[in-house]
Length: 93
Image 1 (cartoon, rainbow, N blue to C red):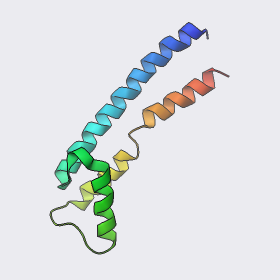
Image 2: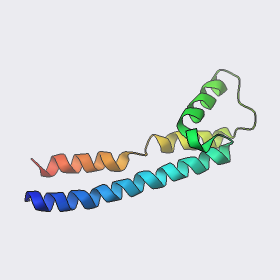
Image 3: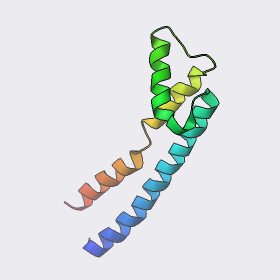
Image 4: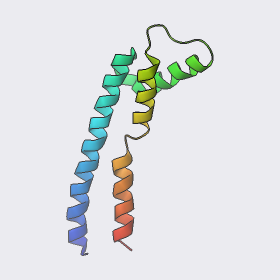
């Protein structure tokens, strides 16, 4: 694969990774709002809510099933970039 071919494929895959991350971030914000958390700070609030829950002091008005979904999805936001990196390493060998 030539450098030009690699750059063309990389930029296409990078655009896909961006769309994946954007869509997952958007979904995280929706889940945060549905769970009763601030959607602008979904990662921080979801983590703090779960910590309080595990210490026996759950936050009032928070749907913890949605918080669990949010935390799972948040941990996978950047998967597209990880796959892109693995592809790039594989084809450049």
